[in-house]
Length: 97
Image 1: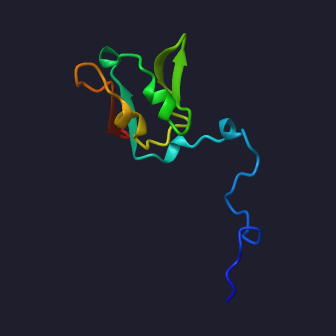
Image 2: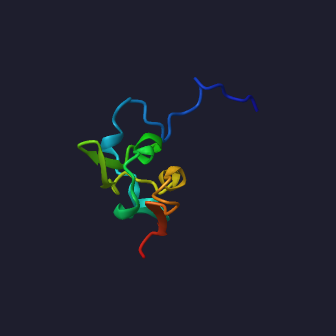
């Protein structure tokens, strides 16, 4: 069997239109979700910078929470969070708990 090149592959689940992620709610299948602990937050916005889904909500240059409709629970925000005095401002919790 001949291997297909990228032009021959079927589109399947590929989203071809750029800039339309807001129209797709992707947060329903995550296993873990981030929880924000405001008192430990130093407002560095590393979570906002590193979030691959732009699911960190910010107002007036301050973190305000998460858009759980789009958050996939990858945990990048929690890994990058320096927190205050070693106490993370974002921790990952099992979904539904």
